[in-house]
Image (cartoon, rainbow, N blue to C red; front, side):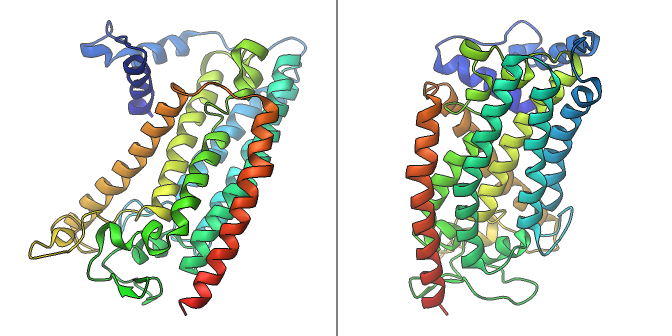
Length: 346
């Protein structure tokens, strides 16, 4: 999170041709710690007319729902918080509680701007969960499993520990020995490349990031459901947003971009995949696995930041039009195509 916040400031400064934080520490590296110290000293104010219990509970609900989803993410071939067979289902179910927390924050604040922001956020998240869920189901249908670690093994040169061998062929070509980018879902099934683009757009809306930052539209509703919050409770809401950005970036990398597997294939006399992706159960395998997965996730986060500081905020009607009349029909078509593709590959 520390790297994300600092990178956001520096990326926005680069795009806007300015320096960004420079005063606190070398190149402004200690700016975030200065901000954290400031937030710790700020008074935690609860509006007199607010519903105190719900107001105090809402940031904890949002924070817990986002961070609980990290439990099923496989960081390396051997390092995973929970190897639940229904990891994808658990992740989506836990994240749905974030909507409850946002609505609690907006309603309990007893502020019209907070309520407007909460209603916008709930409508946006619930709407975009449909195309998001359909794109996730496309990858799950191709892999025939809800286990994120299982999906990771299928996209590399190592077969699964359960000997589940489906998915190692692309267009009739055996890519098991090739590994690398050729074994990723976006190339094994070309339609999943389109699915990943839709997935990325939907994650921007799920994270309330521009151009879908209508719940926090400063020029219209002050700061949305966060308006009445201060101190560390506001910091929890802020931290949850960045945690959500990183979470969906990890999920996209695992489902579509080869997870912890190396992007370098074994082609020609130099077998790069063997050199840059150690065997499961070894220290080198865990180090390289973590490096590749974190690198892919951070590149996706960088893309989210780039979009925020490049595109303007869209209108509410445009946001709903994009979801219901563009992304959802395309996602349904991709879902059908993935089902047919899976049947043909049996």
